[in-house]
Each structure stands twice: as C-alpha cells, then as structure tokens.
Amino acid sequence: MEKRNSETLEFYNRFQDKKNAFARVGWGSHERQLERFATFLRYAELSRDVECLDFGCGNSALVSYLDEVGCCYRGYVGVELNENLASEAKKNLTSQKQRVFVGDFFEDSLRVDIQLSANTLRVGALIGTFNFLPRNNLQLIADFYQLCTRFELTRLIGFFKSIDSPIFYPEFNYFNPIDFFDGHFRKEFNISLHTGFSDHEFVIVVRPKVP
Image (cartoon, helix red, strand yellow):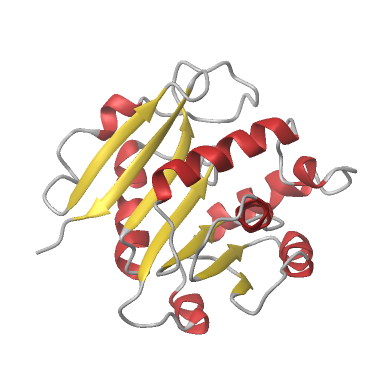
C-alpha cells in the first residue's frame, strides 16, 4: 500500500496551491464536480437511516453538496489520505453527525478508529478516487470487494473514466468497463453499470447479495 499512498499524495500535492476549493482536489470545474455529486445521489438512495462513507473525500465537498440540496442521511464519514485536504475537510463540517478521518481506508487501524455502528445501512462513494492509480481489473475487483466487506456496505458507487477517454494525464491507466463483468464478482454481489451521464465516464454500483 505504501507505493499507492505515495502516488496518491504526489498527485494531489500538485493542486494544493490552487485558489478554488474544487481545483485543490483536481477538478477542472465546479460544474463537473456538481455533476458527479448529483449522479452519486441518483444511485445512492440515501435516507435518514443510511450512512454515507466518502472514500477519498478531499475537502468534503460531497457532504456540503448533500446539505445544500436538502438530502437526508444518518451520518457522513469522510476518509482522506492527504493531511492538508483532510484539515480543510474538517473545517467544512457543520454538524456532529459529520466526521472526517486522515488515513488509508484499506488499513485495519482506520476501520477501528471510525467505530462504525452495528446494524447500519451504509453507502460508499468512490468519486474518481481510483482513476489515476495504475491497476488492472482484477485489482479493481479486489479493492471493491475489500471495501464492501471491511465497512459492511450495502452499496458502493464508483466513478471511472473508460479506456477510450481522452488522455488528460498521460500516466493514467483507465479501464474498459466491459472487462469488469467477467464473473469474478457475481457470486456475492449484484453489479450494475451506468453510462451516459458524462462523455467517456461510467458508474459502477455494487451491492452485496443478501443471503
């Protein structure tokens, strides 16, 4: 995990001097950021009984958006590896039901620190978090599986750029979404893929099957 973490920090450090909050987390425009948030909300099915876990929360713009549009949710937990962004995120929180933690969401110690309540519905958000990290489809599947099981998610929503997208950063490796549906995940999870909300992008919604 150390290499992945160093790559993540190196990527986001290049934006820390940007003036606008959306630019400090790598967004090209505020409009594009809001478009992704609206799409997440469409598939998240949040309610007063559902907690939202934001993996790679940046400066917690997602929870600010949820409040602005009047969305009901039980609680919000943001996880951010970059300490500067996490500090900014904590300053943006407006209630006690909103929390932000600094660390790697694949580490056992962080799972303990968060102290998730038992018997709670949880939706996970990966809004572009994995887009820039080199990996193959099997690694992507393994990461989805680990997040769903580790945090007992009822739904995990991930945003990705497809393999035919224009290359904005040459070092990025994008995935062909068709390859995701090769049977590795189907026994334990229901998977749906959604396109059309934005050019060259797709959304994967993963839901663990109920025994």
